[in-house]
Amino acid sequence: HGPPMTFTGVPPGAWFGEGTLLKREPYRYNIQALRRSTVAGLPLETFHELLETSIAFNRFVLGQINERLGQFIAAREIDRLNDTDSRVARGLAAMFHQVLYPGVGELLRITQQELGYVVGLSRQRVNEALNALQDRGLIRIEYGGVRVLDLEGLRTALFAQD
Image (cartoon, rainbow, N blue to C red; front, side):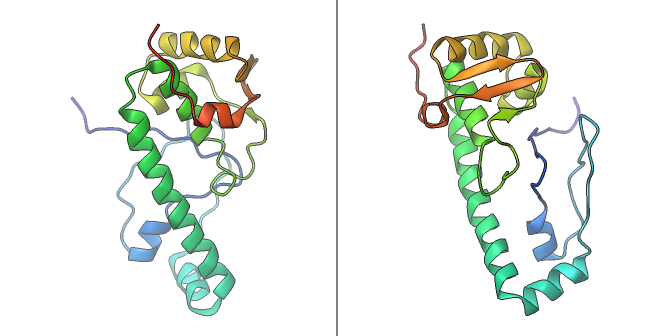
């Protein structure tokens, strides 16, 4: 047994770690990209200088924190769903967050294994759920990803166990 792990997706244009910068703490998490990525860092002092001098930056950071809190609460709700199709639907919908992840568009480039990591299910079970969601007209499975056809349907998905 190793330390517990949490998986998340951070698409192009998104950022994370603002809480650590605000608290001026060392980063406590081991971050690992699962695919080729370009990552930029904002120096701690630059972050705090922007907080002290820019109202627009303050509003942006406050908005990010508010959205992140909402995402965290939704993630706990998703974790408690017993129906795996609903869990995959809501987990997918969480990755289409216009404020936190503005660059996603309609096609999420994610493997079934990666989605399984995020929602805590096996790749095989994710495959079954994706096919069920496709049959319901909510998504289309494409090579290298998932195209969302009905985002609101994914967000509100609660299916009975078949």
